[in-house]
Each structure stands twice: as structure tokens, then as C-alpha cells.
Amino acid sequence: MSNTDTIDWFRNTAPYINTHRGTTVVVGLRAGAVSSENFINVVHDLALMHSLGMRLVIIHEHDALENAPLTHDAMSALLGAISLERSQIERMFSMGLPNSPLHNAKLRVISGNFVTARPAGVLQGIDHGALGIVRQVDVAGVTHALDGAAICLLSTIGHSAAGDVFAVNALELMRVVSRSLSAEKLIVMSAHEGVTTADGDLARQLTVDAARGCIASAPAGMDENIRLACDACDAGVQRVHLVSYSCDGGLIKELYTHDGAGTLVSSDEYEQIVTAQNHDLAGILELIRPLQQEGILADRPNEQIAKDLECFTVITKDSRVIACAALHPNMTDAIGEIACVATHPDYRESGHGERLIEKLVENARELDLKQVYVRTTQTGHWFRELGFKPIDGDALPPAEQAKSSRDRNSNTLIRATQ
Image (cartoon, rainbow, N blue to C red; front, side, top):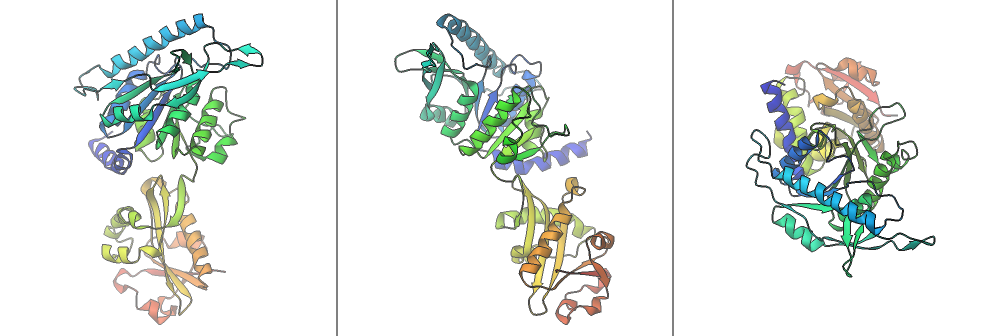
């Protein structure tokens, strides 16, 4: 990557850094994560996320816990293994390695009896021994640790008021902790890259309903990750990310780039086409300013864009504007001008411009406008593919002719809304 590419990438991460700063994020490490060769890079990424202002709660799973009886002898061995793994994680966060995000980081990792559990008890006539069910999370204790700029590390064990120790299911613990803390994000790191479609492609984002439809065909282990993601979203978590712990930089790519490295599951559409709001203004200006400088779009002052903001429709991806267009209606002459059509360079071959135009035509139809038109210097053929026909600019109503900038020598194309 060249220096220019690095600078551009860093600039593009700024909106994500601002969005994620101060958020509570639960990171679930499935079995095998800590022993993975890539885990040191995962630790580096978590340290970087912490330095960028995220409040991190990490839950580590030593072994996948089956819903089966757990003898007290087996529990003793499991406690030893869990304790060893927790110590390993703490040790890796304490390594001040030069040339790494941990150099002089002075990270504090706090573990403790934050989880209360009760025995699973007798199920179908069988005593499940040391197998437990999450009963409560000490929210005040975890919050105190996070407020003190520490990373909170939870193991898959819970304590009872009677002093007993139980092993709890990691997925259930992730769900309960995320819900109890009102976490903005839950990140599940497993051996799987994410949810794959029937064609074998990685699904970058899914609604809860779409994700539930993938459970039956998902491979073993991934099905329960998807189920957890859906349940967590239903419980109020805004976003759940499914990422591989083997992917170098997977966490950073998932959280700080457009398309991520795994699968995002959310209750709402990750990409939305909506009427622009005040917080979208900066994103709109970022899209159209380079095109204005190149002479592709007519030059409109920022103040004018802000004044006309209610005319804009935008496509947002995780709250970031990736495409925009405006419809300026002329109710007297039953015609509307489509202007400021712009798409982020990374998405210009993804059909977003076409979706916007069809949305604006639909909006014009709802306003009882009979026609919409555009003025363009370079994209006439594209508009013709969308059903627009070239006309002489003098054929427009006088009010629209008065808006024309003759020095641009633009072409005019028109389309009926019916």
C-alpha cells in the first residue's frame, strides 16, 4: 500500500472512529481463538480498539460446553484449564512489544466474580452436576471497571450465593452480558469467516430475518453463532458481527472499513435509502464536492445544499452516506429536476445510482409530478439507459429554463413519471 493509499484509508476510518468511540462492545472468543496462531494479532487489534475509545468486555470460551451432565471432577479440570487460558490472555495484554499497538500501552485487564449462576439441576431425571445457567451479571461492577479505562475479561464460569462454582454456556453468557450492559455491539470470533450464501459467497450484512433463514444450512458451530446473533439483536443489541479469529486484521477491517471482513447482523437494514437528515449533510458534501471541482456537477454553495437538504435522498451504510441525489419539485408546472447525483467511488458499480433515480421518480409520482428531468455534461448515456430522453433545454417550462447555467453547456434529458 502506498503512502497516499494509507493516508486515504486513515481518513476514511475517521467516521467509524467517531461512531465507535465510547461504545460498549462485547467480544466473544469462541473455543480455539486463544490457541490460534493469529491470536497475538487479535490482541493487538483489541488493544487498538481500546485506545480508540471502545469500552471492551471480552468473554473467552475454553471448550464448547454441551448441554450434558458435568461431574465435579470434570469441573475441577475445566476450572484449571479456564484459569490457565485467562492468565494467558492477561499475559498477552501485558506484553509491551515494540512496534506493536501494545508498546507502552499500560492496559489493565480486570477479571472477577461478575457472573452469578444457578445449577441447571435435574433435567429429564438426570442431575447435571456442575453445569450452570447464567442468572445475573454484576452490571455495576463491570461498568466500574470500564469507567476506569480497563478491559473487562469474563470466563465461562459463574458463582452462586452458596459459594458453588458452575460452568456456563459461552453463547448464553455473551447474550446475557450484551443485553445487561446495553452493549452497542457484540462481536463473535470463531473459526468461521461469516455467513455464506447458497453460492458460497460471504454475506456482508443480513437482517435478523434473513440470518434466521441461514441457520438450517449453516455448518456445525456457525449455526449457533447465527442463532446467538439473532437472539442478541432481538434483545436490543444494535449490531452483531461474526468474524474469524484466524483473519489477520479481521476486527479492524470489520469495524473501520466499508465492507468489513465478516458478516454483520442487525435488526434493521444495514443499507437504507432514506430522506436526508441534518446529520447527513457532511456526508453529502463529501460526495459531491469532488464532482463539482471536476465540473461534473453544477457548483452549488454549501449553504444552498443545506437549505435544500429536505430535497435530498441518501443511501446510508451503517449510518454513513454512500450515495445521494436531490429532487427539486416545481408543483406549478408538475415537473421536477433531479440533481446532485453522486455515489462513493467504492460503490459506483453496485447499482446505488440506479436505485436512487428510481426512488426519486417514485417520489415525484407521489407528488403528482408528471415529468422529471436532469442536466448533465458527462452521464447522458447512463440516464438514457434509465429511460430518460434528450430534449432541447428550451422545451422546459420558463421557471426551469431560468435555473440553467449556460456556461456548462449541459445536455437536458427528461422522463415521464407514469
